[in-house]
Image: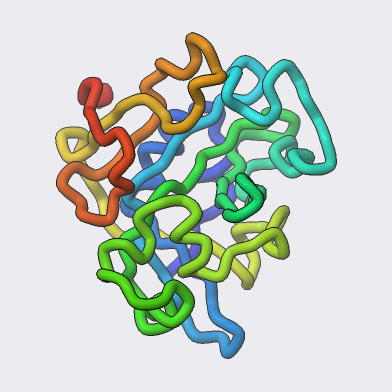
Amino acid sequence: MVKLSRDFYVRIDTIKVARELLGKLLVVPDENGNRVSGMIVEVEAYMGITDKAAHSYAGRRTPRNEVTYAVGGHVYVFFIYGMYNQLNVVSGPADHPHVVLIRALEPVEGIETMRERRGPMPDKNLTSGPGKLCIAMAIDRTLNAEDLLGEKIWLEDFRKYRSNEIATGKRIGIDYAAEDAEKPWRFWLKDNIYVSKSQNREISSPPA
């Protein structure tokens, strides 16, 4: 399969990028070069300087979030709660620090490898959350700032979904973001068993 081009990532409309990430295949080869992959089934958009939930809100720029200011198509991995890594895709042109958090995947390739990394559990739990998928895919801070056009981590076209197959709702775990916590910038595939189980209430169907 062919990797997504830079043009996919550098668009200004981060909401559109987020929705179109649903159905894309995330590939992270293992230490032997074998493909380990999962289809993206849930995402959240973070809208940079004007978004109180974003790490770059009000122009905040630190060594931790510096890659969010890079040109779209780079990886932003951060560590949270002293326990979990979370994977974000940087979108837009340079100095436009928007990102899309990858919240859940549906395993496609290398599921045995994912099971070894995650331990005994139902397959539907392997990648059904942002911390879970990072463990299953061996994503950690060593991948921070990697180019998605490179050889360590990338995205491919895989499946297409219509608007009526996509749900939208509030983002999760951002109560500190005041009115921005209410923005319907979380998108997921309806009835997909790999979507995270937290607050799956749909607000409305996204516009076509």
